[in-house]
Image (cartoon, rainbow, N blue to C red):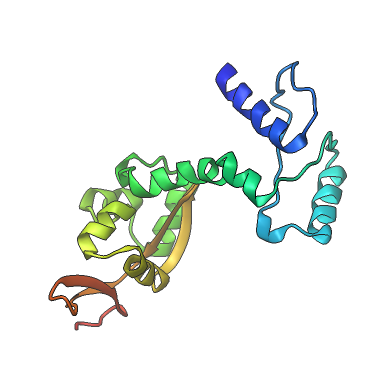
Length: 183
């Protein structure tokens, strides 16, 4: 749609500088970016050679500084959809492709539909609530999780085993534990 094309053109203009996008954006045009931690000459050369080897034409190149990225909210906008899925979308509303459902079945020996209907798969907001944890505590549970797989764009699942224990403040909180641990 036109709004989407304008958004793409704006992003391309910010990175490609003076490229003339007035004729619109073709759906055969792509904006490729290298994440900041990976930007170096070897990676830029690799990306360029791989795209060219696949018959693609690079029409412009550019770069953004950290302050420019922050000023335009580029990372916030990029990760907004991922954050929305993680925090707000109910697992039952996630569109999971059949091949990803099969991968889930293989990894967890149960179907995606069964864990959704049982309420045992949680988004971040619900997990924080159930575990009475903050982000750091939830990250500790996630880090101990097993069979991490990607179900959809920005949507990852893992089997996380936790035990409810009383913390120093007298509250029950979920902490990571090994499967079968009963303390």
